[in-house]
Each structure stands twice: as C-alpha cells, then as structure tokens.
Image (cartoon, each protein chain N blue to C red):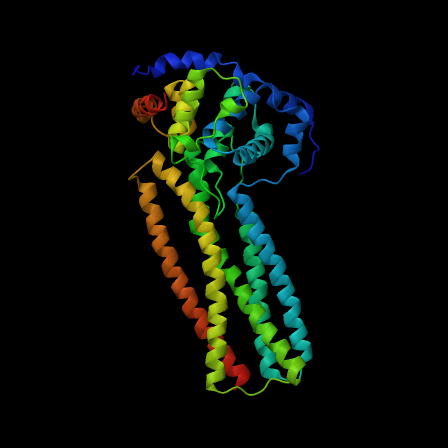
Amino acid sequence: MKAIDIESLKSAWKNEQGFENKTLSQSDIEKFLRKKSRDITQLFKKGLGFDVVLKSIMGASLIGIILLFSDNLALVISMIVLLGLNLWAIWFQVNMYRRIPQTDMSTPAIRSSLEKRIQFYHQHYIKSLYIGALSNVLVFVSGSLYYFYFKYGEIRPLDLVDIVVFGTAIIIAFVFGAVIQIAQHNFQVKQLESCLQEIDEDSITVLTLKEQRNKKLRLFFIALLALVCGLLLLAYFVFR
Amino acid sequence: MTHERNDKPFLELIHRHQSILHKICFAYCNNRSSREDLQQEIVLQLWKSYPSFKGNSLFSTWMYRVALNTAINLTSKPGILTDSPKAPEAAYDPGDEYQLSEEIKILHKAIAFLKKIDKAIILLWLEENSYEEIAETIGITVKNVSVRIVRAKSRLAEIMQKLQ
C-alpha cells in the first residue's frame, strides 16, 4: 500500500479547481439572507420571547381572576402577589434578552466565542429556564380557578387531600417544564462544551464549567423548595 | 432581516469566494440538508459581521475565520444526528457534485472523520495559514498548533490509507 504524504497534498488542495465551480448564484446567496439564523443565541432569544408573551397572557388572565372573584379578599390578595411575581419575571426575562451575547463571528477566536455562549448559558440563561417554568404553574393555577368559577361559580373549600393533590400538580407542572427545557438546551450546549474541551482539555475552563454545573443543580433544588413552600402557603390561604 | 445596507458588493464577494463555503460545508456536514443549513448560517453570519470587515486582511482569510467559527458554534437540535460520520461509508461524497481529483476527494472524506477543532486546524493549514494565524483563529498557543497539526496529519494519513 502506498504511503500518504500529506505535505504534498497541500499544493494539490490549493490548485484544486473543482470547488471553484460557482454552484451558488448571487440570488441563491441573497435567499440565505432572508432565512432565520440557527445559532444557539437565536434559540435563547426565541425561548425568552415566547416566555414573555406567555407571561403577558397569564398577567391578563390573573387580572381576569381578580375581577371575577373581587368579593374574595384572600384570593384577590393572592392574585395580586402572583401578578407582582409575574411582572418581576417578565422584567427578568426582558433583561436576560438584552444580555444575550452578540453573534459577530469575525472578531473573537473560536475558543472565546464558544466560551461566551457556554458561560452565558450556565451563569445567566439557566435562571431564565427556571423562571420560564413558572409559566406552567401560572397556567395551571389560573386554569383551575377559571374552571372553579365557570363550573361552580365559587371556590369550594378544599380539604388537606385536595391541597396535597393541587400542590403535587403544581410541582409536576414546574418540574416538567424545567426538565424539558433544560434537557433540550443541555443537548445543544454540550456540543459546544465538547468543542471547547477539544480545544483545551483539562484546562481551568473545563473545571469551571463542572463547578457551574454543580452550582446549577444546587440552584434548582433551592428554587424548587422555595416554590413548593410558597405555593403550599398560597394554597392554604386561598382554599382554607 | 432588514436590508438597509447595499447588498451588492457583499453578494459579489461571497459569490467570488464561494469555494470556501463549499470546502467548509463538506468538511463539517455529512449530508445535503445539513450542508445547506450550514451554508445558509455561514452566509447569515458573514452578513452580520461584514460591517466589522475593515480590509486589514484578505477577504478570503476573514471569510474563512467567520465560516469556521460558525461551523463550530452551530449545534444540532435533539433528535437530529450529529455531523460526525461514524464510518467511512457514511461520509458525504463531494465528488458527487464536483469534479474533484481523486486524491482531493479522498482527502476531503478523511477530513470529515476528524474532530471539529482538528478539522478547522487542518483546513487552515491546507490554506497555507501560518501557525500564528491558526493559533489566533482557534485561540490556542502556537506550540499547541504545531503539536496538533502533527497529530492531525498522521491521523489523516491513517484514514486516507484505509480509504484508498
């Protein structure tokens, strides 16, 4: 078998005419400019945009509940608290949108553009995914209250079992939303991480990423615990 | 996307240098649809970055840099197969569309088997970029570039031997 001399292929590569065929016309190239980018920063933007719209709809829905149950003071106060939380979440997501790194691919080295995206995801965007999962909780809570209103015209008093069932459903709505979102994003971010690892294996950057992953996990459990306690308290005040 | 800028000079430049687009897309994609996606993404990123091109380097050098950066940063969605072919037979054959010499066809197939960063290093090396330029584009040291080039070349030779 003939030995391969890669050095000798260098000039053959430079002189290869096959790739010079202009298979793309200028109008083909122009068409590309009208398409949407598939860069991961676009995924961040799309996710945040969708969540802001959903949370705005939920805000309107909560106002509707306040108007429908205006004679129930405990419920009105609870809904005002949720509305405030919802407004804060929208503000948080809008701020996050502004922090998404720019996608100019010409200035940074490949390594720094990878680092920029990965760090943004682990340090900032991951929080938005938890905030985003709160939308599921709001959909469930407002959906249930509308159901009560249109079915019974009031909120029936709930016993302990009802509160446990509703509490569990709220937790499932939150965890399900968060897990799906995180899994989808992790799938893509891991591809970037493997490239970064390939550039610089065993470096501080890789170790930092591992630390960030552990921090992310801790943050998730703290957020989950706070949510469960908050919602159970809310359920107690609303349905007692 | 708004088109307030004058597209014409940009489109002409991309049209003139489209061989860079083809070379990179064939190296990073193993099927026609992912290749079209990457072509589109590279053109979009070139368009976004074009205002920052000040002419301090050749347009082709700048285009290579943006295109490689885009190819490496582009991720596939869950459920879609990744772009690294698992077996030689799975590699997309650019010779189907282009009249390439036999040795370049094999070289291209072999490049498709390298890891993403090694592909970038080898492509830049084949385009006769200096070690300093490669180091700057990737974000590693010059010493690291020389080690990686030696390693990638021997891996390429090994794969090409099998493909021949």
